[in-house]
Image 1: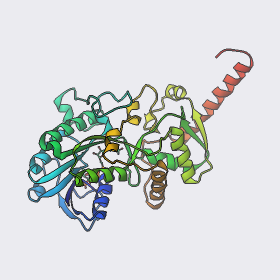
Image 2: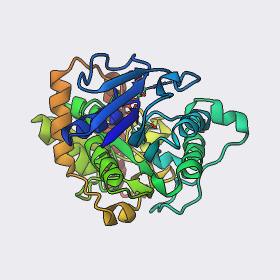
Image 3: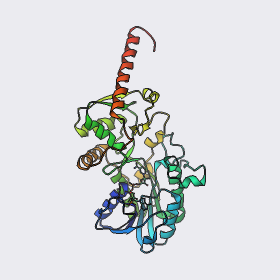
Image 4: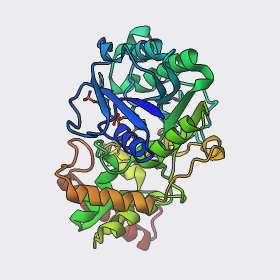
Amino acid sequence: MKILILGGTRFVGRHLATEALLRGHELTLFNRGRSGPGLFPNAEHRRGDRDGGLDALAEGEWDACFDTSGQTPRQVEASTDLLAERVGHYGFISSASAYADRDRAPLSEDAPLASADSPDDLDRRVATTYGARKAACEEVVRKRFGARASILRPSLVAGPYDDSGRFDYWLRRALSGGELLAPGPAHDPVQLLDARDLATFALDLAEREIGGTYNVAGPADDVTFMGLVRGAVNAAGSAARVTWVDPGFLLERGAEPWTEIPLWIPEDGPRGLHGLDVSAARARGFAPRQVGETLRDTLVWIENSATEPVAGIGLDPQRERELLREWHRSQAMSRTLLAAGHEI
Ligand SMILES: NC(=O)c1ccc[n+]([C@@H]2O[C@H](COP(=O)([O-])OP(=O)(O)OC[C@H]3O[C@@H](n4cnc5c(N)ncnc54)[C@H](OP(=O)(O)O)[C@@H]3O)[C@@H](O)[C@H]2O)c1
């Protein structure tokens, strides 16, 4: 097949490009040439900007286009208008954040989508408009490509080349050893998706000319926070001791779910992000791998690349020590009061 990727050189798109080449497809990449320079010498490279610079795509036909970089409906309108007659299948990478109410789980594909307070918000590339922008992009793709469109809504995407720092925090933290703070309850479910499984499924749909909208999340095994943290400690071969800390205690001290304690979603947070119903994708053959494999391969990437932890993601080591000290003090106090016959 002839495949065009709008993007393709950072993380998800990079795995998609790798898989497309492995399958023997003819690949064209369109991007600004800033990320991953020198990648994929066997692909055709076209340079341009999704914001007003699509001239390099004025000619050419492709069996499938994957849009991994569409962030505003304006960008997606421009690319779909330009390509509708020259591309067979359009695969758009949306997000589980496109759902309006992410506080409930399970979330299936027919749940209402996020919308913007004002049309101007759909051009404002800030985190608070992300879900509404992705939902609006989806609408544009559906309108232009109909049954020739596949729209994928991933949960958190993990794996080698992930530059968000959220998943690999747990591996890096395990590597540092010592006492490791983990947020309770330990048995809360966690959903994440290996970027390679996303790439495989996106390509499978295009090759089989199957359209539709699908939640995509893994892993294959039912993972809890304990499974994730213990898996990271085991993968790192670490002697780190895990201490589970009450979520209320952490929230009272201003701990930031998802970012400061990566992947953590407390009870009144957007639990749908760890509760996507993926039965529709599974019925189409989506088969995510087990989390242990994602942990192992991400660890190899961390150890072999010069990547640093991402600023603002994960607990600062000193704050972690202070929280743990305070937690142990409060636990000791509770034990003393209970031993003295007090109700607490
Ligand atoms: N990470 C997660 O947990 C997660 C979860 C759910 C959904 N998603 C979605 O997954 C998608 C994949 O993101 P990714 O960054 O990994 O994809 P990617 O395709 O690997 O990287 C982004 C690509 O877009 C290009 N690009 C960025 N701005 C551009 C512009 N204005 N014009 C032309 N090219 C541009 C970049 O190259 P240049 O910089 O060289 O232009 C790069 O090749 C995103 O849409 C994201 O919303 C991610």
